[in-house]
Image 1 (cartoon, rainbow, N blue to C red):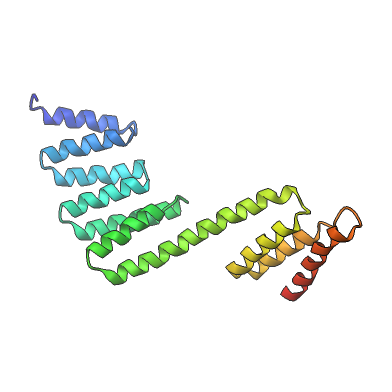
Image 2 (image 1 turned 30 degrees about the vertical axis):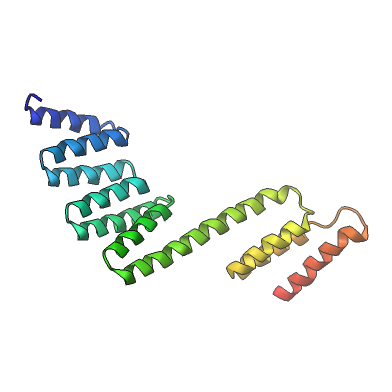
Length: 198
């Protein structure tokens, strides 16, 4: 209101050193956009995504570039965000879905197809990872052979023979605790199936 843009900018810069929440960064960006300082807003967005490396932030950055007619920069934002999040081990599916939508809107169908295929593979990996985790959690009951069979089928569907053999070996290491036919029947089936995988 007093027209002291330089002072306000200085306050924002100091505030950003404290890595505020997303709203703080967005306020700073809005301030620069109010005065049509697009390049400054781009620089702030660049620092924003470094501070808050989340899919939603990368998507906002990309949409900002699209709104300002910078389609090449928008694509670069999506690519950088995807790489950075994968490198940091973060969930990237939301960003990839937005990237596919962007490419479809840009009429880049081949690129969208490629990203979509990569996204499906990533999602499948996440689902298999969760199922593996669930099966590993149930290892506390070592004589639940039906659960072991389910886990083995999962590994077989993934096509990893080494991992499948490892699950078989862990399962057959758990010999039934009593000598009754009903306990040994599933255990013997494990051995037979294991022999076929060799």
